[in-house]
Image (cartoon, rainbow, N blue to C red; front, top):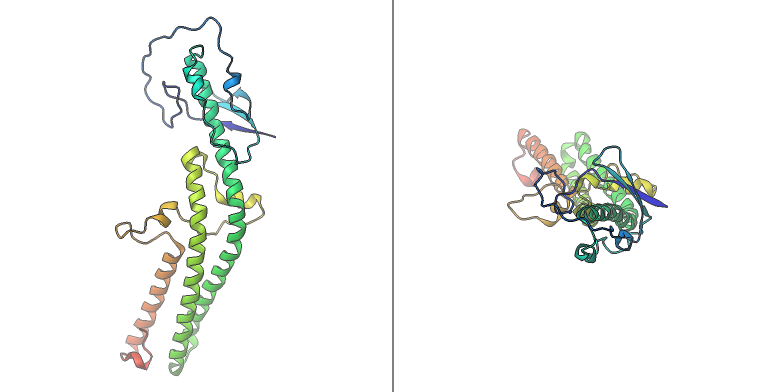
Length: 264
């Protein structure tokens, strides 16, 4: 099976890939060798062929299937030291390896993320169950008599702790998935991001509502960055809003003594 990858981004005048076009820089014309070098010895081992794309700046590259266990595709330095290789050939070779990097990065993400996605499914189910229970316990205050608020508050704090434990367990696992995505984007670029929802769907999972933040949200928790992005952050805001509501009702009812049932 072959993989095909179109390249939408041209290379710069150094023969290296870049994401944005730059104004053309006049170059000194190099002498063309009488016999062009055979680039076959410099091709990536998985390279099959290249075909013209839909436009002049596009090309379709075909590769044998990557497993994700291969090393990062890198053009051999010998190709750039070979005096018989022209600038145009180096440019074509760089494009080939750029395409190979993209295909390889997606194969690696599929291999690495699939087992983690399977492990994530029960964690997400545990979170949704705990979160639903929290909502149910809070809603029961509308039907709780004045003499039973303390008992209901105890049930609420138990539900809060259970939901927080489930959210923290999810965030710890989601951080591992977010790191894999960050690594794939670092190789292929944002335009070639392979979404985890796509990988999940390929293995029979629906991850469309799973909460997975950007990698930085899990790694940078400094005060200046602030909290936000993680599932437990959303939960903490929800709990705070619920407690504010209970405090408001207690104050309106004149329950200013915490021992009389006012929420702490």
